Amino acid sequence: MKSSTSQKSRLSEPVARLVRVSLARPSLNDNRSPETRLREALEGSVFLPLSVIKDLSRLTFSEKYDLDCILLTTCGGQKVARVDKATKLRNPLGVAIDLGSTTIVLYLLDLVDGKELARRTYENPQRAHGEDILARILYASKNDGLERLKDEVLDVFNKGIVELTSEIGSSPEDVYFCSIAGNTTMIHFLLGLDPSHICKEPYIPCANTLDILKSKEIGLKIHPEGEVYCFPNVGSYFGGDLLAGIIASGMHTREEISMLIDVGTNAEVVLGNSSWMVACAGAAGPALEGGILTCGMRAEPGAIERVTISPEDLTVTYKTIKGERPKGLCGSGIIDLLAELFVAGLVDPTGKLEPQKCPERMRDIDGETAFVVAFENESYSKAPIFITQSDIKNLIRSKGAMYTILNVVLQSVGIGFEDVDKFYVAGAFGNYIDPEKAVTIGMLPDVPLNKFVGLGNAAGLGAKELLLNQGAIKEANEITKKITYLEMNVRGDFMSQLTGALFLPHTDRSKFPNVWKKIKA
Image 1: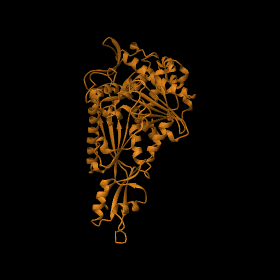
Image 2: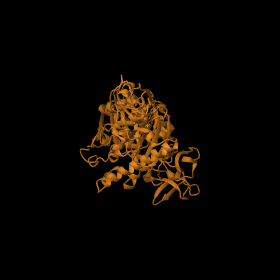
Image 3: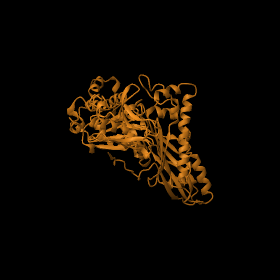
Image 4: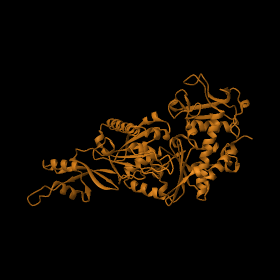
C-alpha cells in the first residue's frame, strides 16, 4: 500500500513563532510604557498576559531593548507567551498527541522548521479499568473514578513531555502548544467532563467544540502561557481522532470523492470531498485487531504480521515483528492468513476448514478443527500458534461488517466503489495491512490497488498538521458543519446486506472478479 503524500507542512503558518524585535528607547519626549512599545513593534493586535508584562518591564528597565518573543497565533488571535532578551529563547516547540483508548502517542515538533524531533508511545493506563470504553464510563460514575481517569492520562502526558524534551536537551517550558486528537469519550475523561450521557439515548456529549484551553486549566505541564487544542467531535461516536484523520488525508480539500477507513475496535468511515461528507461508525474491528482470537495479539515484537502459503506444496512461511520468535497473530497477519488459506483451497467460501487437504497442519484443538501456523518448536512459548474454526467465523463476521458498512455508506449517496478516487486506510491497518489480502477476503472492495493509500496513524498526523498550520483549526470547525452522520444500528439495509458478505469473499461473485481469477477451481 502506498503512503499518503497529502500531508504537507505549511510552515508559513505555525501556531507558534519566534519573533525578534527592537524597541525604541524611552525618553522625556517618548515615555510610553514597555507594553505599548512592544505592541507597536509587533505591528498588530496582540494579547499580553500579565506574566509577560512583568518580564517585559524587568527587561526594558534594565535597558534590554532587543528582545525575543514567542508569539502564539490561533483562531483566537495573537498572544505573546514569553519574552526575553535577544538570542535567549530557543525555537518554540509543540506536542501533538494521539489519545487512543489502547495507546497514547506523543510527537515533539520544532515549530520553526516543522521537524519531528522525537516521539514516544505509551500504553493507556485506563485499560486497567476496562478494555472497552463502556466499562470505563461505568468506572467514571463511581466515587472519584472520573478524576482518576483524568489524572492517569495527564500523568502520561506530563511524563512523556519531560522525556521528549529531555531527549533533545530542552525542557517542558519550551513547549507552547499542544494539539490532542482522541475519540469523544477519551476527551471527556481528559477534561473531567461527565461521559455518562454519551452511551445512552439520545447519545449527547457535554460539548462538541471546545475553545482553545490554557495548559494550566487542565494540568498540562508545558509553558504556563501555553495553549491546548482538542479536536472537536461530531457526536458520541464520531470523535476528534477521526476529524484529525480527515485533516491528515486532505480529502476535505479535494473535489474528487474519497473514503477514509479507520479500523480499530470499531470501523469508522468517512465519505466525501470538499463540498460534502457522510460518516458512520460500526462494530467491525475487534476480530481484525487480533485481540479476541485464540492466538491473537497486538502488533508487538513477536507478533506474526505476514503469512504466505504456497499453493503448490502448502508450505507456510511467516514474518514476525522485529524478527522475534512468534508469540501470536496480529491484525495484518490474521488477514494474510485467511486470504492465503482461501487461495490455497484450505478453507472454502463459507469459511470451513478443509482438514483432509493439509493433515500435517490441521489439528483437533479443544474439540474443534484448527490450522497450525507455527509449531511448538518454533514459537516463543513452545506452544503452537494456530487459527480455529471459531476464529475464522469471527473473522468473517468482522470483515463482512466492514465491507457492508462501506457499501451502505456509498449507497446512501447513490454511488458505487468505482466512483471513489482514493481509499485512505488509517490506524495500525494503514501501516501494515496488505490491501490485496484484504480484498481477497472481501474486507475491502475489489478496485485497482493503487486507489488504496495507507495513512498510518492518521490521528497523530492530523494533530501534527494542526501545529504547523494555524488554519487547520478553522478547517476542523468547518468540516464538522458539513458532516452528515449515519447511524448503522437503525439501518435495515445494513443487516440485510451483511448476510451476503459473510462468505469469502462474498456471495455475489461479480463484486470480486479479480479475486476469483486467483482461486483454483
